[in-house]
Image (cartoon, rainbow, N blue to C red; front, side):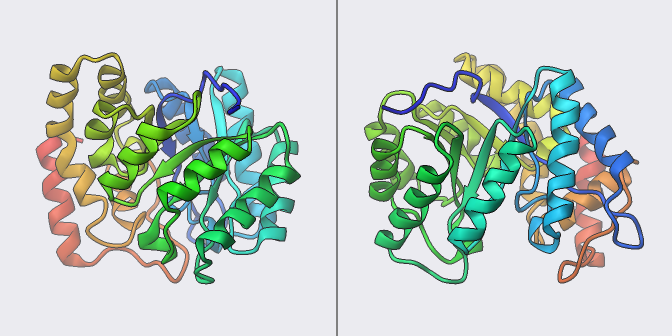
Length: 299
């Protein structure tokens, strides 16, 4: 039976990682951003995901970011779901163990990218990870647009039934039929999170448990309120916020994330717009569109 994880519900922020001009991690800025999240009502923090540019960070840097997140979270009764996945099963196991030792409450494990495993390969990969970190909660992360491979509903459900510590999935497939199959057939206690901001409201209406958000980096209060209203069944209020912030949800992906988000956050005075190659700052055309959204939402 799936382990019951009561705290895994609501709005989680896929944290950006602020860098200095020389490319180093701006630890002081990062701690401020995490505190801002908690102050804005976000109680689930996701460091070292796609939005955090984890694939361009060394292992020691990723551990630093996780430890900083844990340090702030533990002072404010928040939880940490650390990104630990890669396309190397052994390396994922090793780093997931290190994230647990660093104080993370759970791991977000992305589908293997580039290798394009079969569904049997997916089952073997995630099963090996789950067996190797027994007692540590795992959230699957399905994002075919990034990985070029899809964790099917059948595979997700098999993993949920087979391993009690595979407790959730972050679904960013954009395939509503697939997500609905998971929602309909999932075992008791298994959680489903939207991996797309704009899909959160409809998926929660279908029974999902929350959102792993990009736009909550910019507007944590509004995003967490929208999710909370939806989870409480107050859809009239949730819809009002959803349509208000929808332009920002969409603008964050007009170019490769998190570049648009970092431009907005720079304009808000929250960080310096530094990314690690191969990501680069957004184009002039994108800046015009993003600044229009900033003006519209009075950020």
